[in-house]
Length: 75
Image 1 (tube, rainbow, N blue to C red):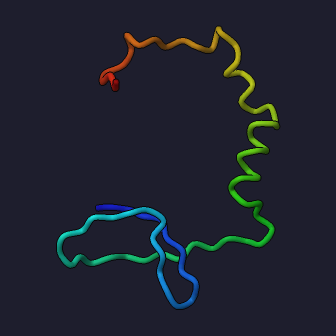
Image 2: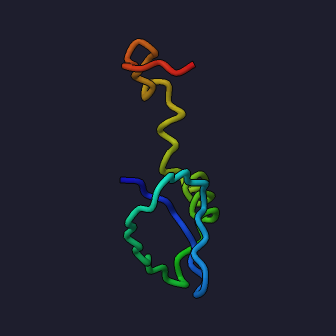
Image 3: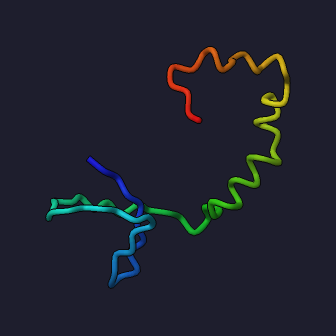
């Protein structure tokens, strides 16, 4: 199964990423409700960065993993 985000403007479904499908496939389309009061994703990202909730990641004591902990190493 493959999930792909898309935008439906009332007439056309626009995929947000390229998909390579070689034969006809069944699909399930789910329409996600978003409230006008919900901030856009870029604003939410900014709020997370500036809000302090992730500040603990700057503490060296929180960096408890090393490359030795990796099961797969990507180059």
